[in-house]
Length: 27
Image (cartoon, rainbow, N blue to C red):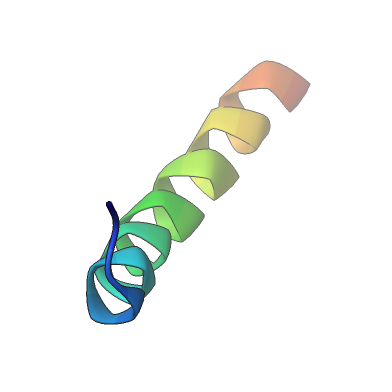
């Protein structure tokens, strides 16, 4: 099971990664 703290860290790491992915897709 994913803990709340772990989920926050994962979201924090995925947020910028997903943003970069969208930026690359837009180009």
